[in-house]
Length: 417
Ligand code: AMP
Image (cartoon, rainbow, N blue to C red; front, side, top):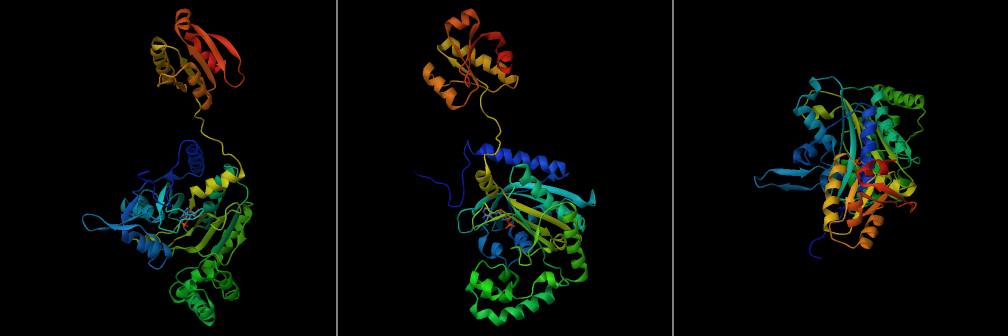
């Protein structure tokens, strides 16, 4: 074969796409219940937007972005995540002036040049939610409730909600110094990846996947134990609100997200149905980000969730309910005259919203019946000279095999009864 899709990308073919549509429909439904409006931004942006918001030293910016120069020599990047673009649009269009609190969601492809493996793609899809304009911990918890509601609505029961606080610009710097001091003691025994992070991005050492690293850093100080009073109160309130809504969660002091812009709350939802890449969703508060991107100081909170991972979990816990594409009626035709009649009839029924299919390939009656079966049509009717003359035919219920006489002018009511 001449051309193939690029490694780490995936085609979604009919048969699977119905699951996607069902998931997308459920997401939109839940977003409307929580009163969030959709935003659609371009898939590429100025490179600086992501470097500035996600952080130069993060894995995403330093190793994974699809960055290229266009013909005018401008550096552009395929978006690796959705928050930066949503906030760029929010600032650019003065959205905050219309209302002090803006509730947005998005869905679409994201691009990261990661090593492809199960659950890790280079073009993957996320849905994400942002609440911009309030520092209330209620919105931190609302983010978690939205994600969990979507999973529950889809029948996913097994997941773990992990919450942490990553502090703020006041308490994080002194904590970082404390942590670097503690890490320097074991530095030379750490994995090469963690060693490189000790000075530049010490928080990421804490969530190292290396078992030896974890043993070495078991007793290092954690941010949640060194929060300033404001962050501490905020974190306490998040937990109180979670308890108040009866939402099970665990406090995970080692939860550090891979993006620099988080302040105070960070959370992750994981599923045991996934392998080593077990994160379904992650998010947190980003009170400094709007200002960092050139807007007025405005607090915000959000999360993003992977759609492929969600579908992987769905595939394991049971068949999702699908958008129904099965034809209600397949009109099987014997000769040209019947084909002409069927074409007009199909047009008439489709105008009324009935899912009808016909044969376009001049196949035999037997082959058309096989096709109707393959498409799981609910009813078939065979039309030839006799049927057209008598204006009647035999309507076959494909599930029971039973046949009934039908007046050709009353097919519609017959298939709907
Ligand atoms: P992040 O933007 O890194 O916080 O990721 C949020 C969610 O997106 C993760 O929890 C995953 O479900 C999903 N995700 C992130 N990276 C990938 C990837 N390379 N392939 C598939 N899903 C991903």
